[in-house]
Image (cartoon, rainbow, N blue to C red; front, side):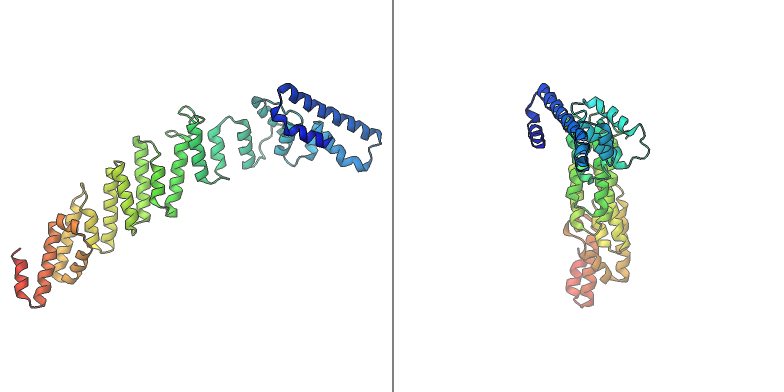
Length: 334
């Protein structure tokens, strides 16, 4: 009997609705016949577990309830052995009947399952899944759902200005920043956000947070600047120049600070202030200024007249100390 049932179940996807119902009700009928035989034999103890199994196969609600450890198991057995042809819209009513309308003691995973089974709010389902599924998986799940138009402009989440997909992308980026993830990864996800003013500001804030985590990593900073240039984030780019420059000022690395301040189109006074500070220190300790100048690349040197003057001044003072007046004189004539 069980062998026949399994073979029929394997082929159930290839049957018509009529054939399906015929198989299903024949199985229940055979279960009833076997139960009658057990009853006729006096309900012997050796048949007790077999009887319970037959009752479940026959769709007996009491046996199903007794064998279930929670509502989900009971629901699945009900669906398989009582209502295998239940329509999607009937599922919610079946679940509420099983729960007797009491949802107060449900766990988060229970609520997630209920949302999935009801299928009424895909946004809510995905958000509940955050407790159990890596955020990156949800980001790509939401991306697929939006591509398949399951999540659409009219199917907004509780977020007032962005849909579920965009919210998950933002949350994932926020989780990547403190983990020091490579900017190629962060930039890739940032590129999938809309270009409206709200998201431009959000993108700006996230990039600056990433910048704060990699102030000593020149390669990462270079990639961030390139991203800003290619995506027209001029304001963000200027902010990065300022933040990194100020960090070098605090570290008394004025040469490097000057390199970051020179490209500024706004707040140009930062470069002037640093150059002036270097000039002032030159009169006290030109050796220190020489260290500052060693941090400046050729391009910055060409663009900053004060830096060029300082370089010549340091060479002049160095040659004087070597008593090489002839070579020192050449720098005075420049």
